[in-house]
Amino acid sequence: MANMAMAPRPVGANFWQRLTNRKNRYYFMAFLFVLPALVNFLVFRYLPILAALQASLWQYSLLGGYRDFNGITHYLNMIHDTYFWKSLWVTFLFVVLKVPIQVILSLLLAIFLQKEKWVTSFVRSAVFTPVVTSVVVVSIVWSMMYHSQLGLINSMLSVVGIPRQAFLSNANRALPAITVMMIWKELGFSLIILMAGLKGIPTDYREAAIVDGAKAWQIFWHITLPLLKRVIMFVVVTQTVFSFQVFVPVYVMTKGGPLDATKVIVYYIYQFGFLFQDMGYASALSIVTLVILLVVSVIQMRIFRSDVEY
Amino acid sequence: MSLEDRLSSGELVVDTTPLKQEFVIPRWVRKTIGGIFEYALYIVLIVIFATPFVWMILSSVRNQAEIFAYLYPFGWHTFVPVEWTLQNFLDVFGLSEAGQGNGLYFQRFLFNSLLVSVGVVTSSLIFNTMGAYFFARLEFPHKNVLLVFVIATMLVPFQATIVPLYIVVRGLNLQDSYWGLIVPWYASPFVIFALMQFMRDIPKDLDEAAIIDGASLFGVLRYVIVPLSIPGIVTTALLEFQFIWNLFYWPLIVISRPQLQMIQVAIANQTTQTQIYWGRTFAGAVLASVPVILLFLLLQKYYVQGIATSGLKG
Image 1 (tube, chains in turn orange, blue):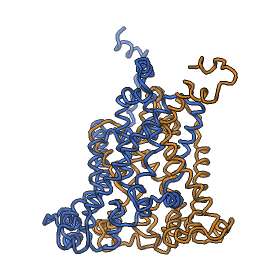
Image 2 (cartoon, rainbow over the protein chains, first blue to last red):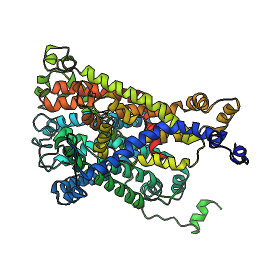
Image 3 (cartoon, rainbow over the protein chains, first blue to last red):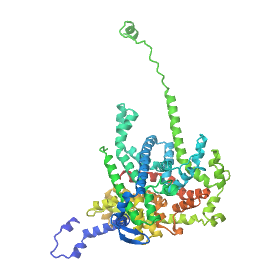
Image 4 (cartoon, rainbow over the protein chains, first blue to last red):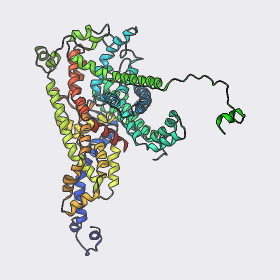
């Protein structure tokens, strides 16, 4: 094929001949394989960002369409929008509560459940079941468990003599309650990835350390942890990005309340776009969220960058 | 010289100061305590993770009044029904008078979810497999640039860009239809990436042999690559099915005709409107989750493998 492409062509060989030579025909056929996927990504992943950029500069609603050109007014408005800052704060709290606890718990569990036994595989399945369950179902069942009068959790607490608590209707407890539920739901996901990472560590290192008389925690701290750094980074980055976009639990359980204590950024965007019919501002909020998430994940990748290869 | 002689001659000195009495827990006791502790932790974990499901499933087969009646004091019947009944399921399927009166017809929502999931999985099987084959095997100028184009889409936050996606889908006039639910997801960067990793491990000699035998590019894919990638394809199809079946935010905004709604949105709407009908809510939750959970328990190996590989190699 290479020979054909490089063979000297008669002067004036027409364009059509070149286009249909074997190599280009091959490229054309090859490209057909990837074309549908590329079109999908172009239209449904990249184009929305451009559409949002455009909509964010206009006064735009679904019913009224494009009206006045706004320039960067939407972005300037955001600076004075206290609800926007509040929702960013709530989202931030959710992420910094959830991600570290989830990663540490799943790391401990991964080590605890490492042994291949029928019990551990049974426990692993139990931990993983919430992962494949929809967030909607989990949120519905947990909001009933959290119910202040008829909830299962209050019923259990009554056994140890603790009086009935309000969880979701208390502004101080609603966000932690949702956080606990989401850790419960997604623990299995990070567990699976960390367990696969643990399996990937060559046993030689551990064995060498044991021969040298290292204690269990020393092995964990000086061998397992550094070698797991890349996997932990992957979990932290993906969980941060996922958690930052939490929406369904808020929609199902609290609708952003009480007192906006659970109004996360994606719920705020939803309110503007679909409840207040202000697509322009909603798009501007989406763009800002997108930028924040990109910056956060780049920073995290820098911090966690691993020099250890094995 | 015997040991006794050496001792008596004073060549060897025996230290006769009493050993510091250290209380050593016998090995078997330590092992037993450790074992008890270990199994106690297993049980705690299972209780924490299984209780909500057990409560959901058992509450769906008892009547409303009973759920509340046995809540206090906490005990056996807080979970286990006194009187088992399928009434809640008859209600949500509109097979009882009460259910019909409330206009419940969950079979339609289940059907919609099934249709959309199967549609997405089928199209994604075709287009993602083709895309992965392109990246894993075919030659193309600047192929790496295209790969970056694909991988970069994974960085686009999905929930945060739902509003813009809706603007695009509306522009294509696909909103409020099955197409609007299926078309945006017919290809997935995650699946392409995972399958590409999988296909790279297949020996290249095989497709070269097939090409010498006169197979076309499509022939190589159809008769060499696909048969050898079945485990990877099954895994990604499962993950994709679960992803679409559990979709909530997208159908919530793209669908406005109730009869086209998917199951997850339907149950969420039911519960927020009729918060008092706990039994029906539990029945709906069971219908929306148990099929996927059973699928997972049956094919667990593939799920775990899929998540581990698509996550780790990335």
